[in-house]
Length: 115
Length: 115
Image 1: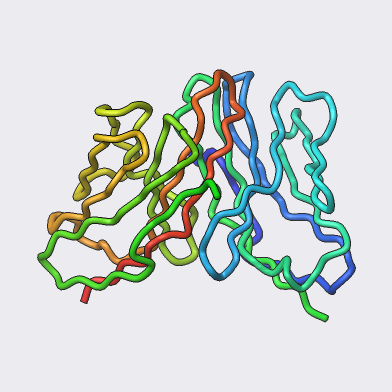
Image 2: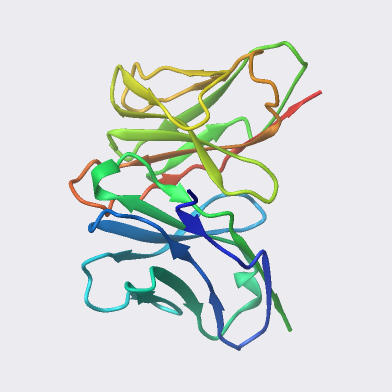
């Protein structure tokens, strides 16, 4: 069963607008963590934001925020005030506490920001 | 500067040859990982190591081998047994703290092409 699902292969957003990238997950472990990574065309993976399953508040890091809806098992990334440099692949990932060695990735969403 | 280095950035090999990809980290992390990324796909775990002289197979270990003789180094060998080795290979490392939050830091990647 697919553990991380990103249903948007590609998204377009105009500069300075906000965009939401979707991520749903599947786990029976009550304790887990959710990560978002950015991968520019150069290939490196850049950590953006983390949300723990027991965190009461949605995580925020600068222009990035995570819309965490535990009952729906969704962890959508919201990028506010998009910039041209935000154009990249974005990956959602999950680690289950019972299996802390593995970080399970989704297939990614390609975001393109246009002027 | 602390970080992860991978070399070379681009690698070409002839079919039937073994090739070794280098990964070095100076973050003093205990855990290291190798991932494979194919076009339009997420990352898939090849091998991981939690401590020196110990490593475990990931989801797609067939045709690959690793060693972990030093904490800083985790080289990956792509053997001739790997049927479709052309891909982008990413190395990562992390601490081994308890819980779900152990951010993985990634290297810049090696793009392997089999001719």
